[in-house]
Length: 287
Image (cartoon, rainbow, N blue to C red):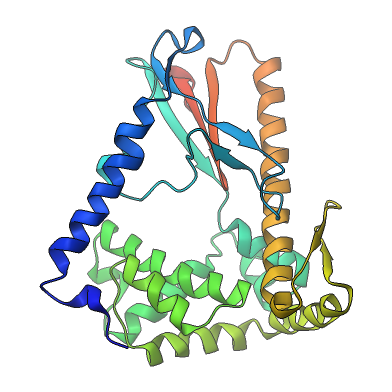
């Protein structure tokens, strides 16, 4: 099927819709949630509400406003800053947390071996393969270009974790600015599945079990109901994302404990989004 978004006459309309959505969702709407917060020195801030029960996987969700689907647009993200001069906005996240959870759950030896290395990075390995398919290498790209390719590689890896196919991968690649034929994306999917075949087989076997019970148990004990037609994708998704939330929750608890026990370190926990924790910290305490 032809992608209408690639037609030259459609491109301006697509750009208008994209930026109109950004302005309405993250420009005008966010202003409705500003509060004068004495805890942040009176700086107008936005405080979303969090829910642990809204998602089936157990991951946190935010509302009023939603802050977990922020686009990668740099101009948009620049509106999120520290409280002012002398403070730094610090964002820290887990590296490849979902793939690490998949490795731990399935005990795939190849995947575990990658993460046993100090610089083990499955996303970068897949990204190098994408570049090789178009006759390029990381050395030929600047940092921004490399990040776009690495983002595209995540589409491959996440599709393989959660049971997606080449079509979903191509769509994710296009969002990162990488346009390749469907057949090329399929070769990456096939290569991933072959390399980490133990992980895939473990999930296939578990999905067959789930078809009988119509439920799956996330490692920390939450039981999720499954649809029989989506046993593979749902059981894989729930267990991986549920495990990722446990890791994040432990990190948040440890950070809050440190905050309570270290009054000499001046920082505030601002928010958490998926696998990242954002804090506002006085400059001298950033390290």
